[in-house]
Image (tube, rainbow, N blue to C red; front, top):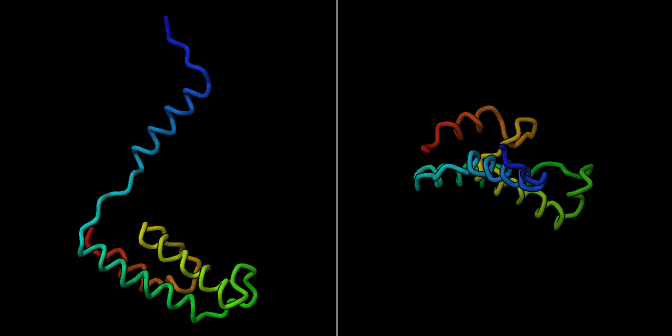
Length: 99
């Protein structure tokens, strides 16, 4: 006879399985240093870009917070191709960083 789990239990099991499968890979110190250099450059490029029409970065303080978020995302290997500070060359350099 099959065991019936409440719907919440099934959801919990799926969430645990997904979290286990997508856990970030451990990185080497050389890879982290390489990515940090690239991610610092992305934040610098963001800070130098025009953001006056961006509702999240209209003031200097808002822009600083807005651009800083790209460092964390970049270091977690989340790079979005439609942002000007992630040029194809930057992405290519990023992909050449050691794991």
